[in-house]
Amino acid sequence: LVSILGTAIGFIIFGVAEPLAGGIGSVFGQDQVTGVGVLAILCGARITDGLTGGNISVAQAYISDITDTASRPRALGLIGVAFGLGFIIGPAAGAFLSRDGNYALPSLIAAAIAGLNLVLVYFLLPESLSAEQREMAMKGHAGKRAISFETLLEALRRPLVGPVLIVTFVFGIAFAMFQTVFSLYALRRFDLSSEQTGYVLAYVGLLSVLVQGVLVGPVTRRFEDVRVIIVAIGVMAVSLLAWALVPSIPLLLLVLIPTSASGGLMNVLLRSSITRAVARDEFGGILGAQASVESMTRVAAPTIGGLLINFFGAAAPGVFGFVVLLVLLPLASSRLIRDSRLVAEAARQSVAAQANATLAEPAGD
Image (cartoon, rainbow, N blue to C red; front, side):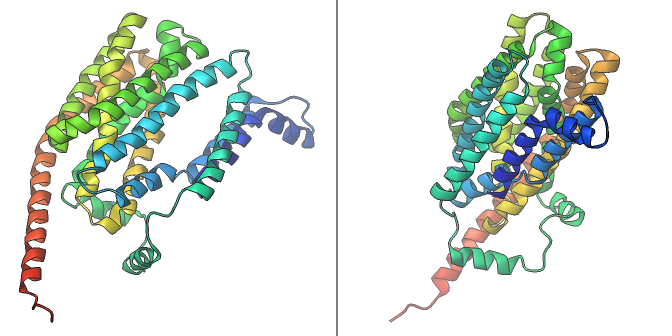
């Protein structure tokens, strides 16, 4: 609820940034709205949303609470489907609403949607844990800091958790760069308008829905998560290189298919894999740590991507992503496979120990 409220407030501030900057400027005797003032308010709006932006991690932890290991990838994929549907409707609606140059309107509509979401969650979404489970979890985590540099280092040293977090960061840098600079890339490379770019991004959202709604289930039932992750890294590397060099819009739309497929699979499997390596009461914390690592990439990626485009051209972010993922591939291949076996063996030993303990208990009257 707090996360969604922060989003609503952030979008309201974002939508009224220009008149708000003018009002603040008039207080200090400025007759004109300055670009610096508007930019400062826009950044403040995004910071407001970012500081409260834990809703995706909590939603993933909620799904993990109410699913078992076998059904969890598909359930997390449904979150991806919901997100993908938003990615279809959002850019298309934003393109339509802003086509007359009214860039504030999409933000205000988004704020209204967030407000509606807040009401629906409050009245319709039940708590996933009982009062007893929450009390036990609170006792188990008493005195522990929820997230800190030390806890992150501790997580990096754990089997499977550490490699998955490393892959999340490195893969996230490459993929977030593709996502965050795509509009600038489309403008520089193909001279697309904001409306045209919005429709292309809606197409990406459609691909994401198809992957996470249709492909995730069959793939995870047939293949091990870590092996699919390794293949997805390779596919994304090649796709980003093709994205960098593609000469036309039709070929761009073709290249976006494997890009969206590998990105959609990774979005689900990185989260599913990391929950296999921790206890149930750690789901929320470890998914939150993973989301924090992912957020770090969204700080670095647009900055690096913008500089690369500025100094080396529109193809540079794609080439950079290809090189980064090519370096990641051997590390991911060795560490993920090794650690997944360690975690699987530890899980088997734990189940065997519990079974032996049950058999050793004396029979009741």
